[in-house]
Length: 386
Ligand code: OSB
Ligand code: MG
Image (cartoon, rainbow, N blue to C red; front, side, top):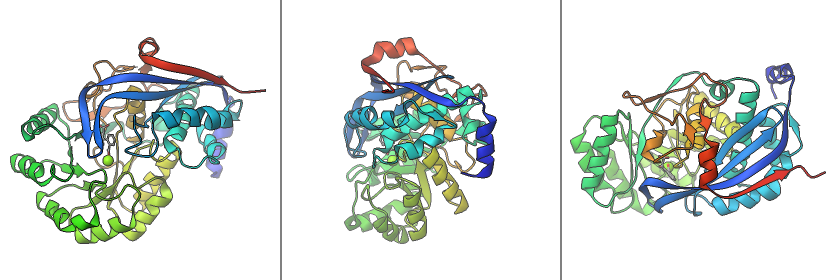
């Protein structure tokens, strides 16, 4: 820990005492299904974590999906991992800051989305206890963030064109199209010829292999901001080989699990842009490390999304205020996903495609506990033993 951080922590007289942790699963149907190269989602099963501290509650969301397709974690793995290992590691402890929870949970290998849910709930509690906005506590420097949208695979090209039109009219500053073999060149050609000047990118979620190199070279003609995660979810080396063959910048998502992966990607030239998802990398502490590493190496980053409820969304908004989040993120309005979100106010995007961040303590969004209670399908509160 740096000396200045130590001083900051000591300046806080009250420590963060973790008295109990509540796990709950909520079910939320999406307004529209979302399809990627690995499948279609109609409804989310979201694991929420509440840390009950002496200074108040902190909330966070595990971004693990309903199925182990985006990553090996899923809703059913996050729950017992937190209940049996991560919660006991922090329960009963008095922490100087949320980041002190990271080494306490380090014995558990992987399970980064589960760890992030616990760590980020502590950051929320810490921000409230210090009466500071979370974004400032994280080191954010901008109060307005730029928003883009991720548009899933549709049933027809016409439907896709309509969606792109709608999102551009709403003001979004970057359009990302999900692609897979058979839903790629054709749709990119249609969208690019209709809108020659928009910021346009695509995301393959690992749908290609190096055998597709000649095919992937054809993406260069569409002047894309980036192609996200074209190859295997656990690969860096072959992305470096592919990047040398493409003019289009590669952006890595799935492959970057932590700052060390990111360092390897920078060193090998596997990408020129990095997608930071706080859940994928195990929490705000690691997300900040990746941010700083990219900044030092002059790689821009942007904030990815995982179809979050308002709780995870509010955390993404806070993270996006850090200086090197130079590109519009997949952080968009609540109403694109939910009929009714579990925070108040809902996340809203201006006509200019931005979100203005609040100066209120914590995330600046109130948790709608009454609504959450109605959506809850299971719930368990854990307390320190002894
Ligand atoms: O790869 O970015 C991805 C959603 C689920 C899983 C993976 C991804 C996504 C998205 C949606 O692209 C982003 C969002 O709008 O939340
Ligand atoms: Mg992605």
